[in-house]
Image (cartoon, rainbow, N blue to C red):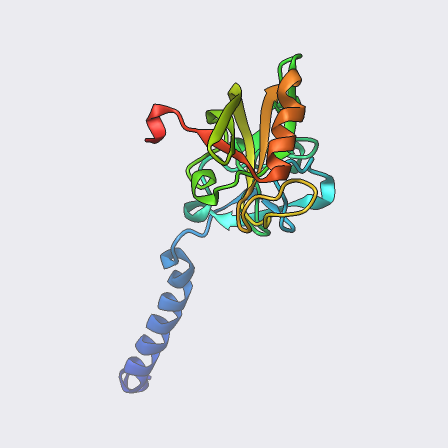
Length: 201
């Protein structure tokens, strides 16, 4: 019996070692903890009021999830997007506009395009600019207190919302109610531009 043990000892020890290593594998695997993240189910334009079908929850590895991402669809549904969000992109609080875009009682939100897309490219949501009508050699200030609410980068120029240069993004701008018609008219004529604050220059 003793001779049999010594004869098969290497095989028994090897088998025991194999099972010990196999049992330890789950303990050696790196942590795969996930967190819920609200993401867009489709491409969403700026100004979209989020409906239940516009967002869903994904479980992402903790290290890959944006730190500020929303963790429940209820935190997003019913809110309006400040800027466009592509399908599969996480929805973060900064993407959501305040109720009613935060308009004052004497403000209107108007969609416009600037004549020069290069000027529009310098703007960001939240910027305050002076809107100017530049018609040939004549210029006129339309409002010195316009506020950029949202920018839709993927909308080409032209159409009823303005005849700015093709490629000029659509801007949603808050302007004083009494100036809204003038601003829309300048956009439609392709003569609208913006005077930037010193921080942009």
